Length: 248
Length: 248
Image (cartoon, rainbow over all chains, first blue to last red; front, side):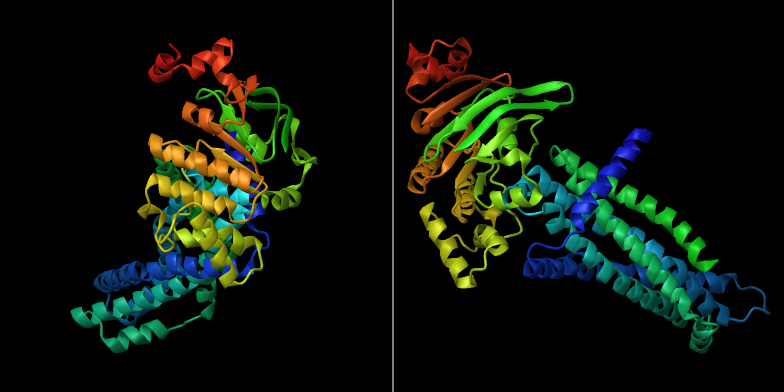
């Protein structure tokens, strides 16, 4: 078991050495990068916005219902929603959701190319297939995921406000005041740093499992599942490590 | 000319290729035949460098491929075209984009020049008005022809065809065989075809190498193959109902 972990880690490092090289043709890299930003990022905006708005609403409602003590001001609803969304929900939970959506897409796309010999065709032509296929996905994820996470923060806080406005559990003034209390830009920086790490994990781990697929359709499915599982585990582990490093 | 000298290949304990020495002539269709699992695909993958040989060497016109580094191989591979068993067309590209892909990656031609070349090779394989179609919209035979067009778009010196007739009806197989033969002679290419189709052997087999259990068992051509006394080869050649009846 330990040998397999070491061997897989070694394979991953070796593959990344081939991924992180200068693209063979700049113009083709830029075209692929734009395609990947579209496929991995723009097409995820809907699901990220939807989930974030509803989660923000739920956090705000739960906080409001749990404030029984009259000495606790209702501005706490806005404050709690902001902190929950920015510190944890947007960077971590949305990254876990992206690990499922984007990670499975990357692994199955590359895995299918492997089992249908499209990767062999690239290699025969003299193309560094690892760089050609995975590098644009990694760069696209590093560029677009922070944008998605910032969107998620906005939508989460907006969802909380809409829920308060709809239920009357807190006034808009209290909610907005709460959002502005003791705001430190550092927590946004912390969230973006986490997002960048998670984006790297999702794109490289999924690319690795897709690239190393062998067999047929069944193995493509297995690669896709492994990509999601390992990306999620690493996100959870690195969430703890980064939180310890950046917030204490 | 391509030469394999003392090529051995192991997968774990399994000795797949056993000291194979063989040469493949320029301007001729050189066929590698053998039963499924005999090692012919492994031999082809060793020749193109998709698998590394464990011992022995592969030589392309006095250039030792086995000793080349990645960059040298990359340059040599621009002289190689390969037709894969499943065509291996890039399924996110149109027919035209597939054929233009090697030109986009490795040439500095203008868009119009690349388009002209793509149209020329597509016409050469008797395909018209398919430029904007996706691979999924083509029949099996058309996909093979597009793959041939892509393989010859860079004017290769060496053409490898891995089971070009698999999944095709006999009539379409004949068309593909003749196309490979014509292109080989027309452009003086060293062509290596992996097949277990006896129709191909008898129609285009200028040189034939029979691989049996990982060993080079017999060498000859389409004329001599019918009159050999080699038992294993006879079992292979006359293994079907049709060929055994013809023999009688």
